[in-house]
Image (cartoon, rainbow, N blue to C red; front, top):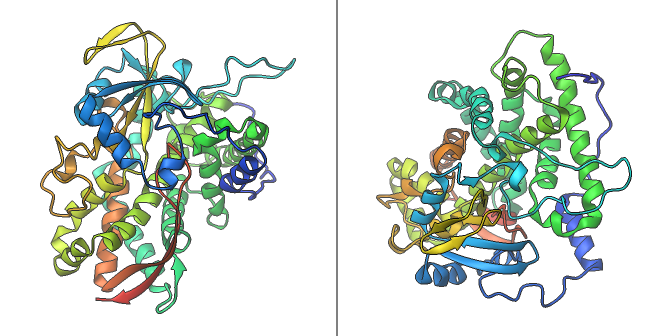
Length: 443
């Protein structure tokens, strides 16, 4: 990568994306009629209020695809059944992930907007939002960080950090599990993957939220602020790149990019895009499942009791909790030509939103799908990590972190009760918790 400044830039840590959005929508309340279609599941209120389940169940009962016209995110197809999503994901040439066609989220790039003189489009290419062959080369660059051998190498460190954190948790008082457990564990893991300065690791959470919140696309007044924050993120990582370029190759992701022909000539926007992918992918998904496990165990105490009585269930419990939580609600594809799909006519350029959280509740695949069942025989059939060539490259690491968290909780006989406020993420992409107030006892 050329023209990289080695000095450490100035950076901000506030406001968070959630705070900025809350203030924006207080001053600019959405029009009441913005969501008129009964199957417009782009609306964030159904997720923050946790009432999305019956809407998707109705869609699944009526068929695999449903067209929504003129939502706040434009027109789109809902793909809601497990089999249908696997089919779409298995045809990457016909249903593109490329940022050039719109990318991987329901939000549309601002390509239609007029630009001021000298202003450039803010496009963030990343390998998950690329088609073959470029996707293949860049994915292969980072894949060695997530091999079984690497997981074995990192096991002791993850276990040690997890145990140390659990030992600091207060007994007999209410605290926020998200801030005390889920965020520190996932942010620390990201810092290790990037060999990121430990004292600045909190920045990774801040950047992840600003990068991954699709609601920001509805608040155009925040565009400039978001761009500035992501440029600050890129400048920080450019400093790391310059430092590591002078060092021997290491096992961290930045070093892998530097020494990869597929990635060491990235332009600044592509570098930023891949950082966004790796940070959001490594942070939001695991963070929200760590919180989702606690909430689900509290909601289904019979399953928590099974976990407490039989730790051999932990590997399957991890798969079931991932299915039940589904930390990323959707991914998007764009049709590259006119085609027929399950009896529906899809036109070139139309976007298909694959709702993973619906597929993971598909009654034709998972019996009693709205219930947590840590003995579920086919829990591994969940598609929370996607399917096909774009399946999450870090899935093994996420599973390892969650398995170790449950093992270390069991070793300490920790039982976690929901004991206060529960606040969910107001978004249609990241599916999780902003706050989860709990209290710890022992079993």
